[in-house]
Image (tube, rainbow, N blue to C red; front, top):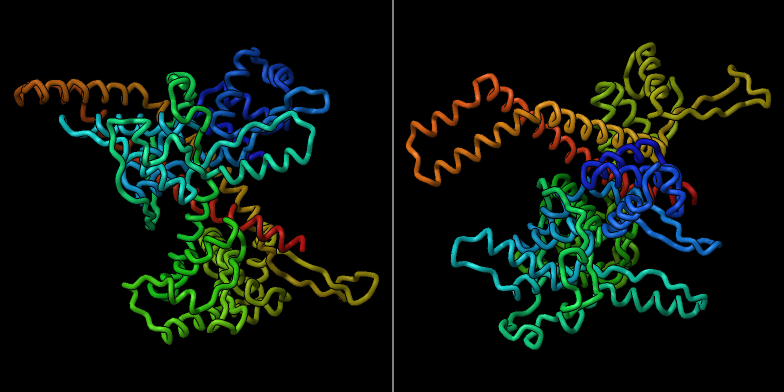
Length: 545
């Protein structure tokens, strides 16, 4: 595990859950799996403090545990799930875009608590929305439950898997695993939409539906490490024992699809984007989430599933499919001629194209346009000698040599030696320069982790340095709001506002500008991290193959 990942995970845990959880999480991330006693000894913390930290991590699905050969429980942290904390704002905004304010509150509550009962999260969301509305208005809990069911049906939410049993019977374990997998998206009968028996005061109506949309960025509230068992009476819940949490894989699939569709919309046009969106929707039933390629689908099947408002005939659809299949990005591949033509989506190729564009942008910003030209040339030609690079890039020999070796020293370019004779004499050896996309992507991902950690550290430093001024501003704002609600005159309001001097107000404005800039940088950097993380697993499989 990279040191940059451990550092970033520690910063996120400290920001979200405090120093004790950060100490335990960073220790396990750096050292591996350990028992409770070993964790307490390694972190120099008390047993009770370690237990509470482990409970928080397990509650938020960031840790697993299993018995070792001696029968003791060993705890293992999943650092990748810890790093998902940086993506919480995107999850919340995605839910808001697809399912409105109710979906936003549902996802925010589950991210804040880790896992909750359906009855409890629906009640809490209903109460929160009612408090935010004007006096006399309220939200029916039935509407919240319907939105919850829609999130489950589209697999954005799933059940929490039961802990592993101690049974040694492998057959029973396999059967139990299959049952768990089938029940992951099954609503308990007591919590179905038609729940008049559970809550007679509420009537049931309406059909389930599904919505599609785009995702963006929004800053979420700080999640709380509160257990659903701490302030709720689970004995009275009709769905006792059935906990739910966020299905991050489904959100990541949605983000990946939206990135590919946005690129297609920019590269070709809206119709090509909608055709690929339809192909993704058709393949959802037959393709495993985040699979590198989809199952083949016929053009007839695609035509039947196109939105009516698109108004495309079969001939135009065939022309667009041919255009997409012949495009050098190879996002759409033709797999056969039956059914008017069989087509598959190669999402790994799409991610590779997006990664290449992102890396080219990095090279352009760091080394200039000429280095970017050399980099693109090597991507196109795979392997070239130094003389060939000079000629094809149309750069003077001395300058091309300097730029090429600058890229080589920064690990953006690799060199392969091909000797003509067994003695490997330099004068009788070909030196071919190329690009290892997997290696460059992994290097950039590590640098992105370091940059994200630096951004978070800088933001925390700015907040700490200006804490007194921020607290003073908050007190003044509270006094102003109180006076305004009590009907104070303009003179009193101006006197309160003058409590903050012009230099302090100028410093506050600068602080807000800097914090906003840092937060926007974090969100943009997370998009690059997500792209590289999505590309690398498939790229690694291709390298091994």
